[in-house]
Image 1 (cartoon, rainbow, N blue to C red):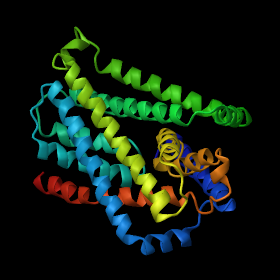
Image 2 (image 1 turned 135 degrees about the vertical axis):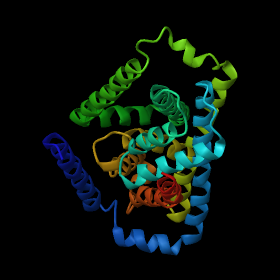
Image 3 (image 1 turned 90 degrees about the vertical axis):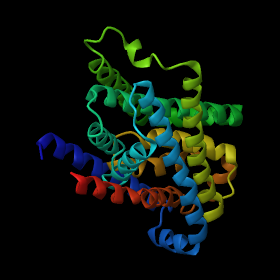
Length: 312
């Protein structure tokens, strides 16, 4: 391992330890309670897992639409297996983007088309997911926005200026990096429009609606864990807003797979609401259960991965 990568890995695990220490010290997380809660609510966790599988089908359908825009003629089942392998690697490799590399590798084996077009399709797939999350975040933010909440949010940002500035710079860096990658893969091309000649208004709406539905389901899963696995009784619109922001934070490459970041963001945002902040014992366990469910529903990816290994 290169020294630079080793230093980055040490930083990520150190930051992860600091976050979990903070959560544990403030009684937001308890591993014994986590295990007991899972076994005591196994039926509803299975139900939530089944709901979560819908997001895999939807993510597969969204990518398939984009691939058709790029004039690929993949079959649904072919892309479904690759999508599942990608989701499996995302969970096992503790990284939000490891699965994208798997998608590139296995989809290229199915076609003689340019690798650049495959990579572009995945970047665009990510962008539509990002747009969907932004729309949901703004919609529910406007729903819960009051003068009191606005001042609390401003105060939270002011009291954590270094943290906020750091996250802002990282976020800007990721956007710039995405733009540079995008430009790299369209250079020496007459026009980017050739990639989107089949992208009409209807296709655009379909992609956005699929992205919205994916994040509605994900937020609903968090809602079920928060209020039915645990009994925190938090309003749906508040959960949809706070978890949408937590999903943004969770995607930042500051810890392995964003572990700890989502838990911290979700907990601290709920703390902004006085009616809930006094009853948040073990609250971060909600996100840990969500991660375990994601891991469980990604396990069929092992089968598809072994099938591809055997066929090579």
